[in-house]
Length: 495
Image 1 (cartoon, rainbow, N blue to C red):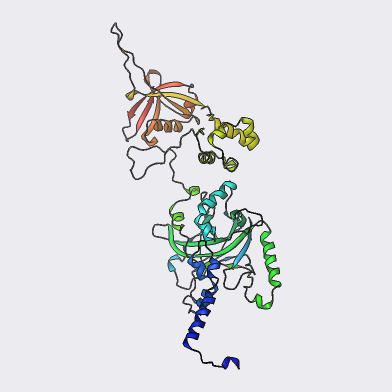
Image 2 (cartoon, rainbow, N blue to C red; image 1 turned 90 degrees about the vertical axis):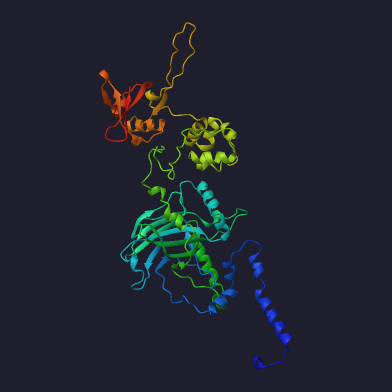
């Protein structure tokens, strides 16, 4: 037989042949990577490295992961053997993810009978988009105001407790669950893959996403920060019914291939098993910072206290007036529109400066934005303030500002005048008056115990909501303070 023949070969010929074979096996690597940015994981995913990996002993072959997550959606049949699976999803459709406890007997006993916390997120698969994730998500937020990239279908879900969706993280949801009980969470992905591609000439190929689940256990402080397990899978999201059409197209293409070609591709599985991966790098931020939608400990009145700790500064008071200036740049104008809840029109006014917007007439704004939002935008541009329900003027008796007038030639004493401050009330309640007085004199509302009004014959009448509602508009008061005998607070007397 031909393969049994042995020819006398010199060392030079053998060496030359080995070099040629090695060069041929590496040819095309540079062409596949191209001149753009790449990662080592992309290089290791090449077939020549895959073959080497298959020959190595699998240390983790028999490793059983503590949890397993199964996405109830079929994988694509048009994926080669050594590539990662790809699953097609329909935009807005609810898909089940089964949360399975895979532990052996006696493994991780510290979570037995306790809850664990899982965070599900939709992230970019492409490294190029991962570097600009913040800008990509902000652009999506502007185009789809009020929508979320990832949402939970809570009525369909089973076994989840305390589900949360952070308003500032549109691509993340989290919940608690008991591994010993049946748990299924239904998710909805509302973005589509083609929303993040460069629009050139139509028919653009959509970018793939990753659905990643990170699970944590409770630490000694009661916070879910100790990482247990992470897994993810690759998906593409299409418009409604688009995933079904794409799955059918891939299946028809595979049916036309020869049996030899079909052997190079994976079969389509009815479900998608998420494979183990590294935890998401921003996981610590998500766990350590409370979600704004669920933060119950907040200051209703951000005023600096005299005995406040320097390390805990209260949030600055947002100014009431936020008028757009004619000198505002297009970037400043975009920020002003966002702050004043005009995000749906940010793209429309992309290149408008402050002067450009201020030149628009009422009719122009209504024609561009519609009647409701147009009137609201016009009033905001003109800085029209809402008239308060009640205005009172107060002066602190112990700190009256006196200014001596020059003496007259006849030697008469100079007259004095008092400086008053205006307080504007909307709710007409004693609580609101307490907060406004504390803000005016830069003290904490807790330092004001009660407010009295000096009545006939010098009596002190407790100020109630009904009394404030019967104050005359633009009434004047002189404030006197009286130390409370039982605490460090003060009583304020309106004279």
